[in-house]
Length: 562
Image 1 (cartoon, one colour):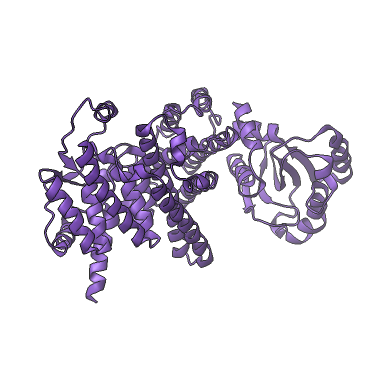
Image 2 (image 1 turned 90 degrees about the vertical axis):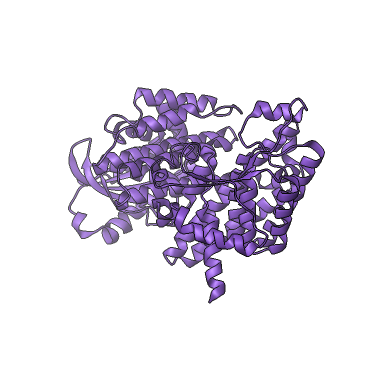
């Protein structure tokens, strides 16, 4: 297991990754950080902390200089940010002028921490420097990858960082990670085992949350190493969802430190999504880009819908960060996240129109990807793109049924889908949620012309189809982050009537909000963490929450009355 930890540590960057891990380690050692890591020069000290040194059980000040990669002759003393100048600054500037007076009488331990090792030809330089500058109340230590992995194993959890049952599951996850048909079952079991017991004591809660983040980070770094980020993107979704579920089950959301730790896990997932997008963005600009990764048209279609859902959630994550930053008046940061969300939305638009199968859903559950994508397009002001895509889908529904007698399967069944495409089985459309969702987004657009096109399609070609809409009930809040919450729970409205006048349909939507909408009272919605609803829908293949388009329909109508 220490090999895995060592591999993970060597891949961490100095700013925001390695220093965060070291801060977590110090907390596990019951050494209290007194300064947070920050960008730029800090007169040699990246992390300052106070606590009991486990080596001699004496209370000390720990001043840590965090460096990247191996400690070589070049990184020892070649520029202003090299190790030796940093150590000199700690002695000359930080200790005399910046160290709080409360701590100046304590012994000081100065530590150089790196995610590499000290190469042999620098060891003499290090020894000479330490011998020369060591005083009665000032000592030195070097933490390389080996030392950090060892301390993580010992201190980050009282029962060891990775018990043997965890080690086996994580090893299996990493071993199978690059297999295209891997279902991530070992990682899911690992998450469930880590969070199997409730905790109330702060340190135990923190250690569980940090262990989840560490495991997710290891998978992220391993995915980078094998040049395949998609598995880690899916794994990070699960980590975020089950952690939310555990926090809610244990009534921990009122604790600020829990919110901070969960937000850090969210930031890791957000970072992973950005890495993924930057890697694959150029593929979206190429027509039929996913066809070369598919054996046939059916696989091409299913791969395209899966990719669309991942892309939409990456964009909605940026929208989530925009909301968080705006709510705390971090306006410049909010603008950056809007620019990022818009860039992803632009890519989603290009991908949709460069990928013809995205006009032809195969399963009714592709309403999930449609709803996620429409939400991102709506949030980024792309109403014309929404109109054009829905219009294309309406034409595709008509043509696909007219020519091939095909309509999206209401129940997901790959074998049946193959038989239908091969002409071995005839499929008669019976029910649909896709048509209902795109119809309601047209109401949100206030586009009467497109509404009439959908109505004509339904009445003319599918007069017997049972239009349906799924709604959450109160108990869904307790399960939506742990399973397919819409499979056997919630409330279903069926036999939906598409009125001749769009205004009548809008009126019915508004009237039903008080009757059917419950998720607007759920923690994920009231706290503003709307992303959790989107992730749960995509990850567990559950129906999207109608609150995301039905409440805006009501609010827009109220605005028009003013």
